[in-house]
Structure formats: C-alpha cells, structure tokens
Amino acid sequence: MFERRQPIPIADAVRKIMEFQSHGVIEKVLIEESYGRFLAENLVATCDVPHFDRAPYDGFAIRSIDSREASVSNTVEFEVVDHIGAGMVSQKMIGKNQAVRIMTGAMMPAGTDAVVMFEVAQTFEKNGIPHMSIKREFKKGENVSFRGEDAKEGEVLVKKGTLINPGIQAMLATFGYKHVPVAKKPLVGLFATGTELLEVEEPLVPGKIRNSNSHMIAAQIERAGGKVHYFGKLPDEFDTCFTAVKNALDGVDILITTGGVSVGDFDFLPEIYEKLGAEVLFNKVAMRPGSVTTVAQHKGKLLFGLSGNPSACYVGFELFARPIIRRLLCVPKPHLRKEKAELKTDFPKANPFTRFVRSSVYIEDGRLMVTPSGLDKSNIIMSLAGANSLTILPGGTRGFTSGTEVEILMLEDQIGSEWPW
Ligand SMILES: Nc1nc2c(c(=O)[nH]1)N[C@H]1C(S)=C(S)[C@@H](COP(=O)(O)OP(=O)(O)OC[C@H]3O[C@@H](n4cnc5c(N)ncnc54)[C@H](O)[C@@H]3O)O[C@H]1N2
Ligand code: MOO
Ligand SMILES: [Mg+2]
Image (cartoon, rainbow, N blue to C red; front, side, top):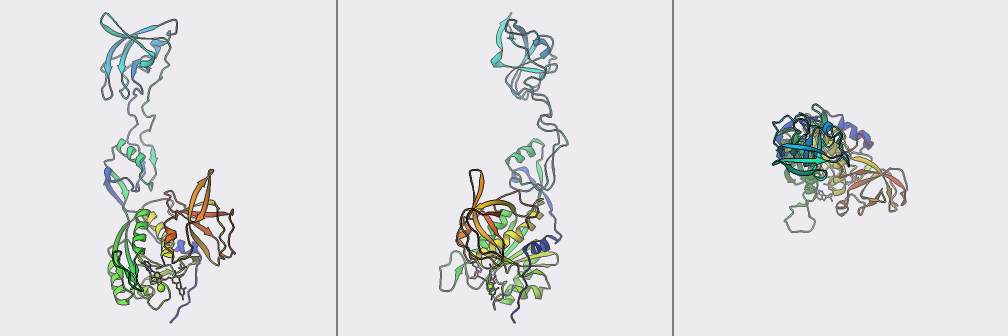
C-alpha cells in the first residue's frame, strides 16, 4: 500500500519539535573537565576581583599627598621602610615621606594610595637606610589596581547556556568553582538501517556500500554538544529493527535512526513507529534535501528518522535534531545561526521546495561570501566535507545568479539563532 505524504513547511516541522517539552539537566563536573561544556547556571562573581587594592607595577608604594611638592626642580625623598612581593602583606602603617618597595600583584600597604614605578624613581642610601626620590607629583590612586575593578561580588558575568571557553575557565578558577554546574550532555542513541551497509573495515562487494551515516551523525551529535550511544547497524528486516528500536529507547534521551523512512518496500521506520504506538509529528517536509525526515514521539522521547541519503541525513540532523540537543544543553538560541551572504556562483537549478545547499562561507573584504561546497544532490557525500554552512534557497524559483544576497545557516557557530524561520 503506497501512502502519499503531505509535506509541511519547515517552520511548522521545527515548531512541532520545539513544542515538545524538554529542558536541560544539571550535573557538576570538576573544573578540569568543564572546558567545552555548557554552563547550566549563571556564573556569578563570588568575590570582588581583585579582592584587595594592589600594585600593578614593580616600584614604590607611597602616600600621594607626600608627592605634592615634587617637580623637576624639587626632588622629594622617601625613606623605604618595607619590602614586599606578591602574596606578602606589609605590617607597617606608612607615615609621612615613607615608602614601601613593592612588586606587581602585592597588596597596597596601609596608608599608601599610589605607586611609583622603578623607572621614575632614584634609589640611594642615607645612613645605611634605603631611600628613593621622585621629581613629579603622583595623584591619589595613580598606578593602583583597585579592589573590584575586574569584577564586583554578586555580578552575573556569564549567562547560563554559554559554552565554556578558556576565558570562562579562568573565571571559574578565580571564583573558586572547583565543581562546575554544567548541562548534562543529552545521550543520543544512534542506529543505521540498511541491508546494504558494510562496516568501515569491510571490503567492497557488488551492491553494498560502507556505512558512512553513523560516523557522520555521531560527529554531528558531538559537534552539537551531545553524547553518542551508537547501537550499530541493522538490516532492513522489520522484526529485527522493531525490537532493536524498542529496546534502545529506555536507555537514551533521544533516538536517531538513519535510512528506511521513505516509501520503499524495505523502508520500515513508518511501520515501526506505528507498532510502537509512537505519535508521528511529521513525515514529509517541504525542503530539499531531507524531505522524508520523519519525527515521532513515544513516551516523552523524540525519535528522529533521518533519511538514508547522506546529504539529506546531514541536513535533517542540523535542522531538526540539533536544536533539541542545544535546548537540553540550556543554550538560549538553539537553532543554527542565520546570516546574510553574497552568493559567489550561479545556482541554476529550479527549486520547487526550499533548498539547503551545502556551502562554504568565507570572508572577503569584511563581507560574507558563500559558494556551494560540491554537488547538490541528496545522495552526495563529498560536498559535506567543505560545508561550514547551508545556503537557504527559497522554493518556487528558477534558480539564483551570482551576486544575489542569500541567507545562510552557519554550521560551526556557537551562538545560534533564537528562531531562523
Ligand atoms: N517513490 C519515492 N521514492 C523516494 C522518495 C519519494 O518521495 N518517493 N524520496 C526520495 C528521497 S527524497 C530520499 S532522501 C530517499 C530517502 O530514503 P530512505 O530515508 O528511505 O533511506 P534508504 O532507502 O534506507 O536509503 C537511501 C539511500 O541512502 C543510502 N544509505 C542508507 N543508509 C546509509 C548509510 N548509513 N551510509 C551511507 N549511505 C546510506 C542507501 O544505500 C540509499 O542509496 O528516498 C527517495 N526515494
Ligand atoms: O529527503 Mo530527499 O533528500 O529530499 O532527496
Ligand atoms: Mg528508502
């Protein structure tokens, strides 16, 4: 029995997925393991930084008031009464015309409010006691790094959902976050279906191909921030596939299958969803490639039936599965980032449906330029390697010419879009 499917607009398909209730789960990891994870709570300053006034230069800490009369023609002398480096605290209360020899990072001694750099001080001894002199006035606060100038206690410095980069690592350490609250990586189960599929190490034989989708999707799951549970490949046999899918569901947050979603005699995913009692959210989207992408939900879990055709599989993941993974990672803008770019090549193919062309975007004279990264057919693999973006070519057109401004979705960006549709 052949079933004719009704394509739905891309925005409706994405909306149906995003309406599905899902939110991130917090876990605490050691700071050493937090790089590359997503903050699950706002990062708040737990103290002022620095938490004491300190010297930003090697030199002498003085009371600025004592330098008031200093000028080229009037040298003012100071008795050097203490000597401190970073980490040391002077116990002296500094009096009139006294100075402390101080190193970068050391806490300003009580009473002092300015630092004279070594370069502008003359040092000498008087009766065996170290002294220094200056020939200009220093203002109150001159060359002082003040308490709280970097951050104030209680300030929200980085928002929940931000990818932890090396700078955030420095902040986390500064504020004493030994354990960092990060979003638990959603566990994404993955099956490849297809009797034609060989393992990577198997030699080619007539009619069979190596399974590339699993490796591609596993990498896409990781790029999005998820964790992969690869269950292996399945032959196109209903019972085997049904049992495998049913058993896999319990242990994962999301389940992805590749292949077997179209209307072929060995495309069993539609019947598997039916027998499971899963609710199919959609099984045809008005787009190319990836039109047969099917998404269902069963007992609160999303099942993504991605197309077997590699490029369709790739695009289906990025448009439909990635945003849910990003939302589970607490990312506020879960969709691919949309930007405008200039098309650098003619694209003469007519477009009944909106087309997502695997593309390479680059910067030329400060502007974004984009060009297809290879052949644009859904069974093509090679164009995926150079793709860092998808050019959106709206449907109902006769093609596009070089120089046209187009919209693109960026594949390797971490900021995202709130809603690009
Ligand atoms: N009569 C119709 N036929 C097809 C339609 C349609 O609407 N009516 N849709 C076409 C479109 S569009 C696509 S896309 C494909 C989708 O097919 P399936 O998702 O059912 O995938 P399969 O049939 O299993 O495989 C398709 C193709 O991809 C190769 N493949 C599958 N798995 C892998 C893998 N893991 N690694 C590499 N390549 C894989 C497979 O060998 C097939 O060549 O259906 C059209 N047909
Ligand atoms: O799902 Mo197909 O990719 O539209 O060629
Ligand atoms: Mg098929």
